[in-house]
Length: 436
Image 1: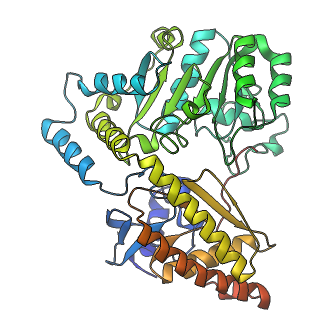
Image 2 (image 1 turned 180 degrees about the vertical axis):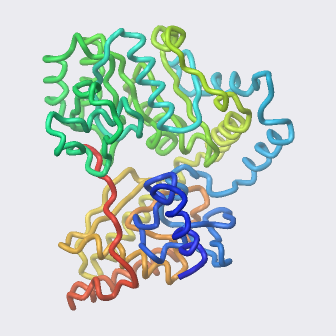
Image 3 (image 1 turned 135 degrees about the vertical axis):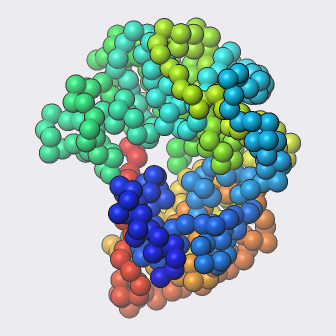
């Protein structure tokens, strides 16, 4: 056990849950073994507190660092912002420059507002949609953050069933008066949304969804979502916090040709620096003036500077093409390695954000064993891979060669039925599940 795990034990006595983000808890990867903390990072490499260096082939900063860690062009821009003074009594001009760039990339949009993370910007989107329509109910599909407006989806008439829609996202502390304000529908199941509009259309403030999930939309799905929003007089909000800057330079909805009324971005937009943006049609965005939406640190300089530098490099280098190619290579490499070992897996996700699952009763233990064996080979790895500009072809081929060895280990453990006995710690915790 290294210094990181020792420190994590201490953290659990000082910080509820140990970390600020569920997805960064060591228990989600490799309990009692995951390094937990880093001292520095560069490209695709991460150094732990003991000086060991690992190649990150897992979440790449929870899918935020699309250019790689500590990108030199971003470093230069951000250091300039720090030296200029990141916070003053006056506003930074870069927020105007960023608004112009975002609108250039999304010509349907006319205005922009900012926050500093995905959960915040989605709460802003919900507030603006409700203010614009004077309504309260929201139809939604997918995951949209931790705030009350969204977790109200997990309130039910029977207290014992709280959390039944999205296991792992408990609504404790969410006012029960919000019950019934969130109406779920399933991706690519347009009949769900038709029923909601038929029963609640005059009450709908918004339809909120990710435009692309682990699979793309069926023909006509997004087009009918757009039509149903118009029929109900509801604001269509595309949550691009995860999907933005993956298959193209901007929102993935531009690839699909369906435009929302509001679109929210964070994560890859600023490559690991705290920044989020909401863009939209003027007629909807101006409703922000009728509500109180304001925060001191939404005005600091580093976030907009990082976003500008990140987007410009992304566009200049055509990073989406690299991500797509790398994601495809990893997807195919996993499948080849699993087939060669005789391990049944399923691979899903956008090409830059691919995942695999083992078709086996002890799938969680096998995922834990995978992370354990890859860690021993010098990787921060899980049954997921978030492609970045720093994942070179040579790095990916080396990773897949080592992953091939580990799939053989998994196959041997399955044959001998001794998966858990090979683990040096507990089985990983399950991730929360998104609404299908």
